[in-house]
Length: 358
Image (tube, rainbow, N blue to C red):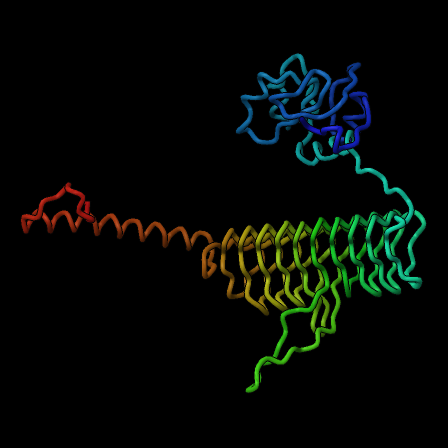
């Protein structure tokens, strides 16, 4: 069930006009009240659904939804029983409509009796501090922030407005902008992996930088972001990091970057704006990745990536070049099997009996 009331707050019902306004779309006027959102396959006549991928066009024909958000070219395919809410960008429209019915719950101002708050901390009276949270000296918690249970916020850490910090997050040596969201279990601001090799062993290098999370950054569960060594580690405004991402010291992400689960970025690497890094990709240190470059899943990036490039493989290389190499290897493999069969026929070796050349 979408929006199970045990877990999600709900508003409404909302008029069709209010839904269309939220979607920033257009629709023919009709008296219709809508109570929620649902997938095409299960939506009821008082619910809103959407279609953004033609792969699911068949589900549109049979949907019972009262309204469907679609692209202009799909409007005529919406059943007569439903209203077509038309927009060039159905998925963002769907996000806004879903948020209309299921807004984030507001913070409950106050400090839980079991929280430990240093006398030098500054907490806005509209902020919520959950059970067993620890707030260090000189920390600053901005208006309407929500601090979940068992969060540890270190000395001097600053949170801007409307930040959401999930359960058991630890924050140290960090400055957060407005509307930053950090999901449960993330670790932000710990020592970077910095050491010098000496004849007597490893010598730890003091990590003297910070972590800067700019406005509207979202950090996934159990992600780790090391503070800088001498410079700061910076996550640019609007960037999204998935669960289980590793960001090393001095890394700098531009605006609106996307880093998918289990990717790792080594120290002092710079990503310009709008870079996308797919799951389990690894980037070595001191690289420069240009604006809007895309790095494929499990890629191993060992050299700079130019702006706008798409790279895959390990070592990473341009997509077209990688596919040409794969195609060549397949041709060579087939040719080798044919040559093997030909040689078998010439020397009398039986074929078709499980021989590796078959």
